Length: 243
Image (cartoon, rainbow, N blue to C red):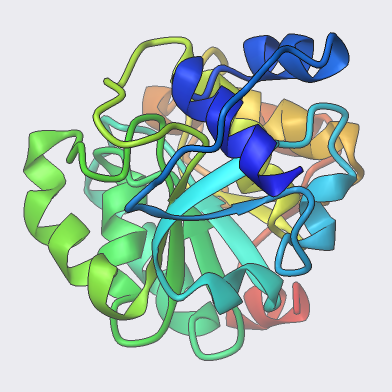
């Protein structure tokens, strides 16, 4: 089944629905070669955490230490456009947790890049929405190169697949599922970060939020989540209690 999934994944550029349909109708396939490292849902290395998803990925292409997928992990996510407070909180939360858990985020601009950078001394997983050889956004090229050494970058999409808009909300389910908790550093009520929160809630992953000042537009999503019952983080003891 491993070779069959790879064949469909390359043919259909990693698109989950098309791979699923090809498997359902047992579409004819040929064995293909792939220079990129990958695991499939049929492999023993495939993490159980992803199997709980309604739409579990059929395949993951990767660069780095695949063993990180089966270690305890916490997601730290937030806005692409963050202010100084958000940036400082992202670094701080990561610094408190990184020696105790693998950090998971989306390798986007803003909070994602900040926490991945802060985690370089330990371990993090970057979940991306394009091929592993496509460094997007360009601002993160140096970070990508650093993470290839001792961290892990994963994608459902084979090499050369572009960062299409619909890939990013879809990849958020992986960020949520790989994690024992999701920490929201800074977000607006309507944002990609909130999509990650929704994915986490679907599989009963707890949500933790950094509080923000009254009427702070940058953190209004965090305050909304807290008002709706998300856990609030007010000190380092709260952060460590997540573990």
